[in-house]
Length: 347
Image (cartoon, rainbow, N blue to C red; front, side, top):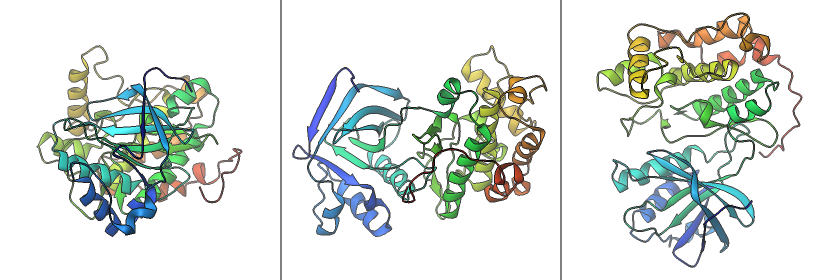
């Protein structure tokens, strides 16, 4: 990997690389939160020493490869291993709240699962008062997002990839979390050609109230959350909402289009989003069904059985939607043949 503009830092220059294990237990998570609040974060507790990587070289390349108003993603290496580093921006948010959301995202990802992006740890570096200086560290996956992968491998089994994501969401729900941002850009492809879920910045524990008021990308959000958004009463991600969003992700994979791509296609992005919000929340609009001669049916693997399941998951009444586990038990997912190479048991 060769990229322009490198930044190097070592563990001796006010830098910490904290192992993922630190974020598994709540008591230890609180300890790292307390440490990160300090102007120059240093973990002094002896109970945390084993969770700090031994001094090593980490290298980060500029410019970022992906940016939004909330975060930047950089490529780099950790002990020679290609990695991606995701750092939140201090955008319309207090530093203390940004740290809490950052640690919350790390804790959601701290449990290993085949279909959840592997979380390696956290990089903490002093970048001054205008930057948070905290980065989540993940393996670099050369296949990219699921839609980038399918553009290069259009004959791959999309039903299997949808099942991968359903399994990831099932794991989250079993642990008491909702994702809140399931869409193609938040699904990557691993070296074993499996879909892995990422983008946990809006995830929340279902045992606690939402700590933010922003909503995910509108075309993938369920109508009940859009209605709350219209009334300035956003309550955060939910399990039924994740079911709806996962079906929207399935639509994106099978049709190669984002949901509601047909609504005001020539309008400005802001106008389109407003039109989608109103038509879905108030008009009970569903994503446009492709014709029988569309590529979704003729080459991408969409069937009437799958379409029927998507419509069930899009039920306007969230209480009548199937759960993720209900969907996984349907024959279209339970009986699909998986010929991909097996993954190690500890992954």
